[in-house]
Image 1 (cartoon, chains in turn blue, brown):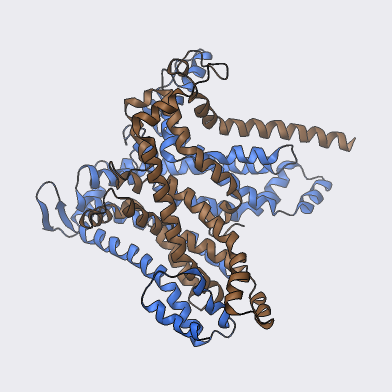
Image 2 (cartoon, chains in turn green, brown; image 1 turned 30 degrees about the vertical axis):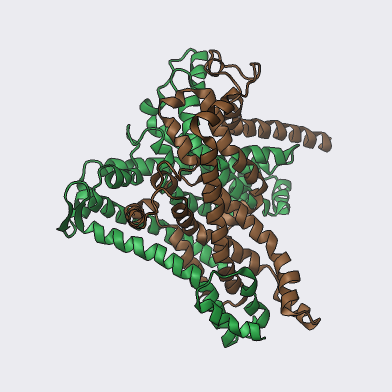
Length: 319
Length: 276
């Protein structure tokens, strides 16, 4: 017991917490939740909480601070407070609305494609078949490819108008090959990003579909319900929560896609998303005030989506 | 009759699923195949699929010319280091939340999750500035810290879900049987926690390996990992398809293999337990 009492004191020194001593309060009294156990628990949580608090508050405060300043590190530095000027200028700049549009089209397009194909693929993979394990592996693979690789492979080896594989296919059908990244730039980005995220949607929807009670489907089949009705009245309602989770998590990640645009179009040809616009303002034109105001908008936008996701996750935590 | 229909349907399902699976996998397969071609074969018209003179030349050229080993090493240090550091910090936190839950545990978990939603671009300049001030720009340690922080919420969540499944009764039973604290930790808790810690490790190495916002923006020459190595091919060098393919294959192969092992944990890990 002596070692256990010395535990909180050790923690106060903020030494890197080792996993083993950490388990002691659990062993000590996890039921009654004595004062000791609770103090120890709080101290064990402290490093993680303090680090995340710092990670959140410090940069956030700085972004807010810069967003109210005219700040051009390469052209005069800190030029004083400007109130909400940056916020107004960011929204009224000619690049803003196109970037909102590009963001919505890309996020919406990828969501539509991955959810629809993901549901179909999940249903297909749930059917009896030979070698399902291997097919699963093939379908999941793109998720593990780093974004810069998938963007570059698609850009050069598939979408190149001369030597790309898609150009060969187009020519085989006697059509003029497309210059994908200039003529259909937004669609190209949607295609690349959908390819990366389809495995994620499929995998989650497949997990959800596997928990569907097959007796219910069989009963409906016996009663003569056609496949379309069985899908609409049994499968789809069962999947609704998983679909919501897929949409919310993907939205958060898709709002900040970066590498795919960075290595393909660099934001040209109508593919400058909000994220990319802010990146350009901050690092390329070094207009920190303006970029920070944009950053605040991006944070607000992401939080609106996050609130909905947290509600679902929170509900699940109670269950 | 019924059996015949089922096995017919099964054959149809199989054909369809394999077709779709191979179509989705094709870009990766094509990249791997192209990496074994000569540059001339890589752009031949019509394209050659399997019947070409297989060569390993591209791999040695990429390795020599661009110092692949250094980028690989950086990736290993950054992905491995950030994950291990994250786990060291997250294990005690997750453990205490799972075994000594309080009224605020749920709020803390959700708040941690919310920090994950912070868009990176919103804090790009502050982090960039802090990195310059602290001399962390283009250092491995800087990236280890940042990637540890962005993945910490996922690590805590995953560990929390695993730890919660360890029944408290087992610990009590062991104590009743006269197990000392040391024995309890060593022989009961640790073995039960290891699978959970291992899958958390796996998934987070993958996430850190593929992270491509901070690794591109906070590195230049010395600390650049494989994501940046590949991005450097977006210049005209990328037109050498066979070499681009060899470099890409080398960058994704380790994680592709790790990823296939972690597919079961992927769902609960990435949905924060909302889909199991």
